[in-house]
Image (tube, rainbow, N blue to C red):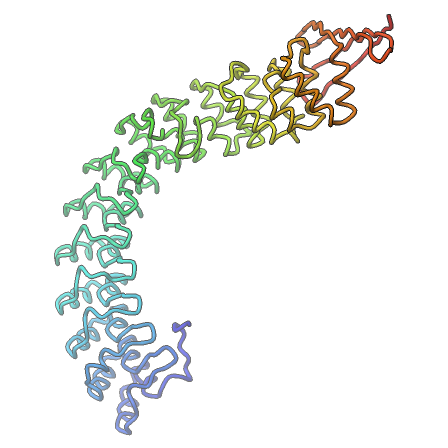
Length: 513
């Protein structure tokens, strides 16, 4: 329910007089015995109206009319008493009158907000001093999440109030429900003045929140360069792990978020174990994950490895593999990794298929991705089978690059791919070198497949391949033996590669002999 809007037809005549500060009308109403505790739609009584609108004389008259402690402490539907309302507006005189009349300086609203917090939030330092003089708790929790007055003053970068709170005994290491201290708040929101005051007061620069993040980490993440510089010069530890798995450091945050100036500050100060440890994560991964080419190149220039250790936490074997989750069709991140010596392998081709990066697939082949030996052939075949509907985008390029099709002819490939793909694969296969077990699997597949595949199998059983290779032209002479009592043919096939794997021009001449 919304209690912020006041409905004029719900406010009593006494309340209206108090709101307007009309002492003459209010006196007449009180003499007639009108009630002082009638609430409007928000639960506001005349005392709340007088306190909020700074109607000093009206407030005195209302307190005189009902001086009971209960009336002074009466709350609105949102839990605000008159003291909350006066403190939020900075009405020093009203606050003083209420405190003298017995108002509780530590009263809380339904959201556990105190008058002191409201005074700080609205920058009313004189009211703050008055509340402290009357016993307001400087270290009390002033919001439902445990955020207190010092957190708020730090966030608003009110140096005068911060100093006053510290002078009056505010705990500089106080934490909210998330373990966040005022110094952490200053680092997170880039409040340099607040940060400087808190550091000067002796606040811990290496404090950690419940999730183990540090002020240096959060400042690096948010890009607050001056705060990072101040923290480092004040003893903040760049090698203090900032997560439960003990791998995340401020350098990772800077790299992932693209803050190059901060990254440049952190690189020479950060222990390189993060780039080599088996249970660590290189910041190279963070730069790739964030898609920040400048940060990536900066790390590689300073000696971080483009082939960093396996990132088991995120399930990637190398930074290159992680790059595929990004839009790398323009090869920015890929080219930087290759420029600094990243080694290509079959897993990179597999990830090209997984993320349908076919331009990158052909680019890797052009860059000389090794086609043998492959230690992860099963993973490649798994992704290749899933990408079979787009095989024209990648399979011709792979086979024309010299990949041995025998590596594909395993049971999973033979049993899973379509007839067209299997026929295409077999067209690049020398049947004389087929292992008997593979030939048997192909024959078994053909027995319950299309007539086209069966006919190809029969023909290939009687074929001898004599290839002659040329950079642009490939002549292949196929010698067919007797098939179904038909005559033998000499089939010469001229295939022309136009540097576009999708385009093939086939001319055939057949001569009977």
